[in-house]
Structure formats: structure tokens, C-alpha cells
Length: 246
Image 1: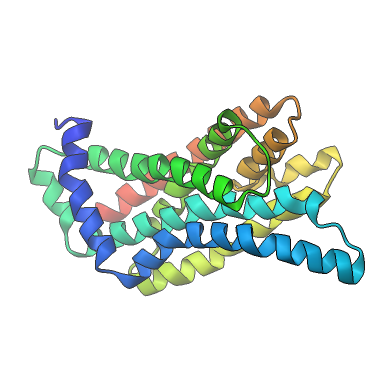
Image 2: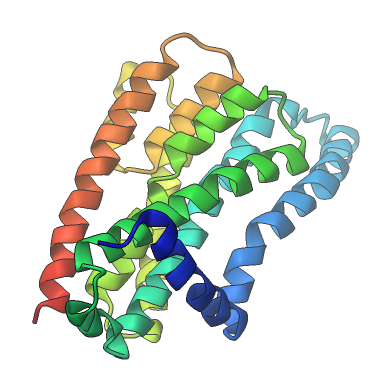
């Protein structure tokens, strides 16, 4: 059984070349940083315009605006990995794994871990670049860690239910509706807000908002979100394995 380092050395360069030669994947990878820069320069201008024109103070909503980056980073990276999975399923790479030392389980472990590991520093960098909220590195790391499972969720969803990139892109557009209920949760103050937690993207936003506001009890949401997201990843892994076994 190859070590984790050997798997990364073998598959990492292949993934890098696949992303480099696909303009859509390159766009998906670079989008979070582009948006973070747009937030850094554009939001203060919008804030000043709203204050002067309408007397509206946008500052209290900065955490809400930043939370769009919290959603964007893992979901876009997950989309990239999902498209890579589709490509490698189509070119029979997964079938070829049957005769190599790397098992399907090891391959999927790599595919799950990679977008999570990449999304954490990218998300922390995006929050820092946007510079709309003040939170220390430990809090930013915890928020990024909680959001990271969204990456394999999106990757496995695309790979398990789409048959090609066109269909995968359509599925991603459709599942985009999942981003809105957690955003609306910002405006729900009653305990019933937690009902929105059926949407897995609620937990990263809730943890981010609580950590940014230094509210107590964020660790409970952190653990509950990880448990729920972990269950969904497990379900999607089983679904994907069934698809490739056909």
C-alpha cells in the first residue's frame, strides 16, 4: 500500500497538469482570491456611497459579506476536484487502479483530503485579503477547518451524480440554491435558526459568525457540523463507489 506522500507525489502533478490545461478549472481555482480582492477594494467604496446617499451603515454586515468567501472557497475547490473525478472516471483511470498498489479507497481518501487541505489556507488567505472582519489566526483556522468538508461534499456530489462536465456544471448551478438558506439564517434570531442546519453549508457560516463575534459555544456548532458533514461525505462515497463499480 503506497504511503500518503507517495500518493501525493504520484497524483499531485497529474492533477496540476489537468487544472493548468483546462481554462474552466483555472478560473474556478483563482476565483476566491479575485473575489477577496474585489471585497477589499469594493466594499469600502460601497460603504461610503451607501452612507452618503442613504445614511446606511454597511459595517455591521461585513461578517455576512465575508461569509460568502467562506462558502465560495471550499465549494469551488470541490467543484474542481469533482470535474477531475469525472475526467478520470471517463478515461478509465479508476478502473486501472484495480491492478495498481493504490486501492480505490486510497484514491478516494486522497480525493477527499486534498481539497480540504487546500481550502483551509486559501480560505484563511481570502479572509485576510478581504480585510472586512477582525479575527485572529486561530479563529480563522477553526472557521476554515469547519468549512473544509464542503469541498469533498461538492466533489463527490458532482462525481456521483453527473456523467460529464456539462452535466456536472448544471448540477453545481442547481445545488447553488443551498447557499441561500444559510445566508438567510443571519437574519433569523430565534432558536429555530438551527433548523436550517439540514443544509450542510449552514454550519460553516454559523461557526464563522460566532467566532467572529466571539460568542461562546461555537465549539458545539463546530463539532455538530463536522459530524453531519462527515455523515454526508460517507453517504456520497458509497454512492460514488457504486457508480464506478457498474
